Image (cartoon, rainbow, N blue to C red):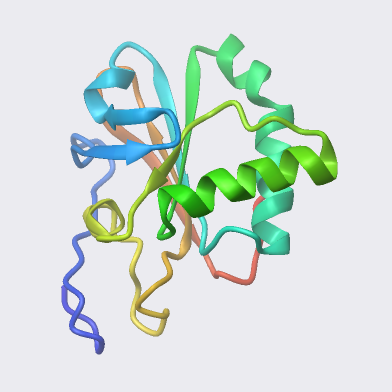
Length: 155
């Protein structure tokens, strides 16, 4: 589909293979296949250093062990640089004394955001909508929820 900003996006489908990716993260290069055998919660947010995104990341970090106990990894995404992510993670540690234990995808090219349908008409060209994708241990997309950029999600 093509929106008014001429950004081509595709929409993934439930019960089909999740869109593949190989991308730079705060924990090195990650591929979808790295998560084979585990559940994966892939979640996007509009930008680093915003209040809603910060509270969500703190909540995900505090529940990380609970996700791990369910054989589930977390993977964040925003259309910010690796360096912005690292600075933001350090800021969260300094201000809130919370470590972010999961990787964050650098997606300046919007390649992953486009593959997962995160760029929506009416959204800024440089922001992914807030979305959550549940991918099963075989790489099949089992659930997806899209939120307005102004809303946070309940972890």
